[in-house]
Length: 318
Image 1: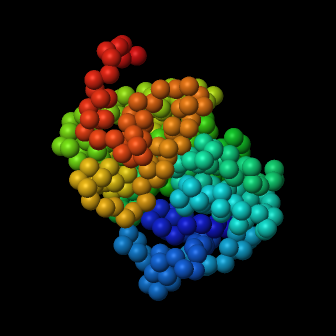
Image 2 (image 1 turned 90 degrees about the horizontal axis):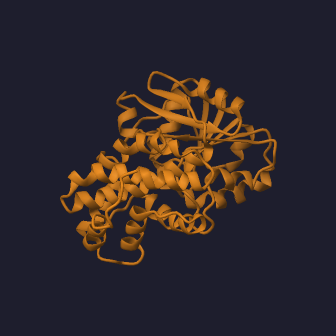
């Protein structure tokens, strides 16, 4: 299977390494000025992995024209810009696999909606979501993930082609729920990091329970299945996001509390703003997301804001 991976950061490179290992014909695309691509060109490795010789590297976006599958792993807020670049190529009969998590800030659009609005009907769209870090997969530590699409045939094709002993894929059954759940878990990851920063890690159990509940309410209001919040896209990804030392979002939250800079992408920083848009649009109360937003964007005192989550009016758990 001929596959182009757009994005040569940590996760995009891992995807190329993984799919190349399954003997697919893989090409990684990155912008010529990208430091990630320059390093791969020079050494064919980064701090996570060494690419097999079978994986090609290019800075020519036209490489997607020959691909059957286009796997995208970039910052979620850059997806519309990428689709604008792809439009002149007039792609057809391609399968876009979105391998990132997020919601567009300005519009509240899910990532599959962005692709659908910028391609013709001959193309197919799927998402690849769930727990796992490049640092662990490259050491042979297995995990379970999910592939979802509105087309059953597309799901079956991708799960069959991508499954291995390293990654067990499940068939997703709710595109809305899986996308929203996956995006929102990064916000919960930031909140978890903030708790770590204050030495309040014991509160993560309550954070996970209540976080899943508020995300489930949003998914239901948007027309998805609220049970998706309890699946691999969200609750199933909490270990990798809320506890793992490799979690960008958790680390960002922790260092924010400590007043230290963080130079890696923490997608939850952008997602939380989009979550506030969705909360207003669908009339859903998202107290944890609102607390993270208030701290990051409204510059409210973090300790007072987080404490306020636990001083809310007493109510039934469910």
